[in-house]
Length: 111
Image 1 (spheres, rainbow, N blue to C red):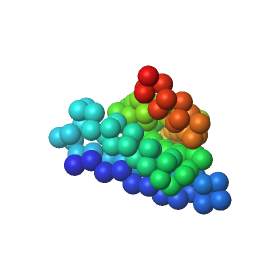
Image 2 (spheres, rainbow, N blue to C red):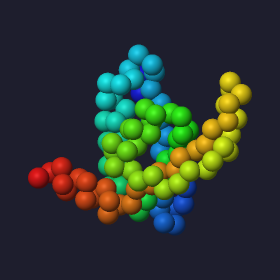
Image 3 (cartoon, rainbow, N blue to C red):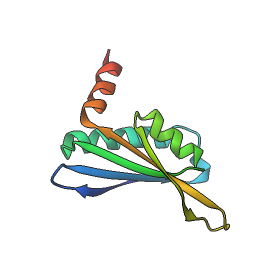
Image 4 (spheres, rainbow, N blue to C red):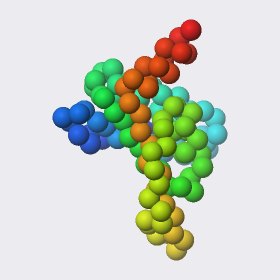
């Protein structure tokens, strides 16, 4: 099972945040990338967003790859800002995408 959620960050801009997870049985098959791409389209065109953001643990390589494959831009890293269940410390990577960036990606794929 794959799930994507949308949260409002700033209605005045408007800006939304996305998050996602997928069961281990479905990892690495492209389902999450496809779901995130579809969700970005919904957010930009149906919710008329100006910006979408996401954050991910720096050690979650598959999720980082999904965000980058969808065209989101790495905007920063909060270094060592959380302790994980196993006691290790890691950081949070922040990603963003502007409407014009999404439209450029969409336009280039339509060619």
